[in-house]
Length: 75
Image (tube, rainbow, N blue to C red; front, side):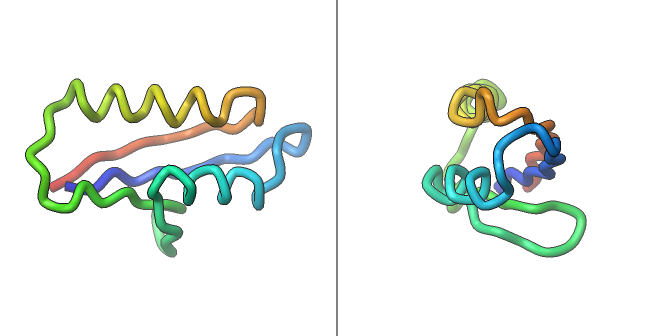
């Protein structure tokens, strides 16, 4: 499974480089195309609640950076 994130930046918020550094520190990789970042669960059997817990952690890490996040988790 993979979780994709699309980030929308605000000119009054954190810099793109700061947001990128935070997400990479959390295990995301940058990607090109429809999404900006991808987290690979590396074949683990995960539940929806585990994904929600992970999204909560991402939100907490980026709190105050004034970004809009869109998540999509797929097989």
